[in-house]
Image 1 (cartoon, rainbow, N blue to C red):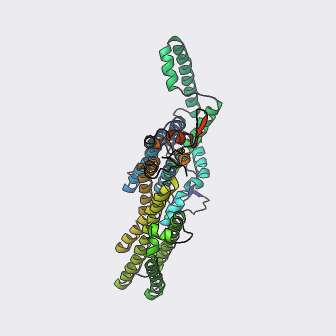
Image 2: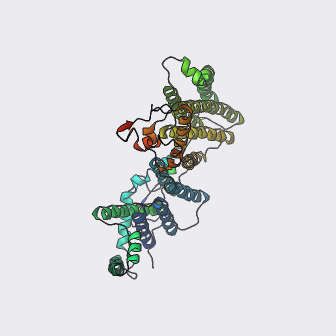
Length: 476
């Protein structure tokens, strides 16, 4: 017999909630079912064993989380929820395929955000933003829910204390007999040593901490799956009270300003190296950075303008809808010109100075922001944006996965090696700091350069310093 979690209905007694009983009530007598407690402990055990020194640790732990949540949650998953499961597992698999810490950290963090947003079942901008903050909002609720669940475990089944005693006795017996068998047979001892982790005080403390954190995260995921918040109810309802001429005049002026600016700036935006070389005091670095910050500012302001216009402008008749499509579509298309300009500037920067992690990341962000404007164009044609917040999130996930599939460190190394072959210039200090993903590409370097990359600078050969500056090599 298992405990049944308290359902949410009109007669359920609620505690005090900051969000209100209609948005996210506190269930005064809600408690964690036994399946959730045991499943979360199992997920914590998987995390404590695999997350420390296993390349598949993040993926295996994510799989454990999915299994626990599916076991705790009743009912069939929607297509959106299945897509969320696929996205979380795909992002978690990056850690098993790539060694670059920055892309692994980015993918894992985004996987956590996707998981909590999908569990919260949000579809508005407000709901998604608050859903992403769930890890901060959950600890107190989950602690009380878990405590009540652990304190009301069915007495007809095995008690937690007895389970712990049986586990301790089993572990002790296995350790004793394994030690005896290992002393009797060297091959068995070697095999046992290969699969047994080295345990010391620091390792035990670290794995215990990982177990506690992973178990708590699994409990939190189950809590949200069983008691999802209704943050979408906090989204402001649109009040379309602005008449056609009241929004058309300011928006039309902004579109006209965009068009004039793009017309005047075409030589600057797409001037390339000629513009850089003919402009006093301008470098490729400044040229690219200006393009990126212009893009970022334009994106934020344009999205704000579009959001306010769509929320306030009337669209009752065909004339209103046609005007909205025309002006907002023109604004998005002109913004795409700025996106293309920023990408062009960054390509010139990379061509001149080589590829780096930051430059590649900025390029990926620019492509994602460009996709946001394309989605806005589609929303304008359909005159429906309910799907837009989730589509923007899907675009972010696909961008990170594409970046991981590109193998960024290897991509950076390959282009820097090709640049070295053409120009004889290479930044050995930066390339030496790349992850093992870049090793295969760096093997293409000449033998007298590879030691400098490995040492991230000059190397001592014999009784002299080799500075990597023979006639074919120069270090900037």
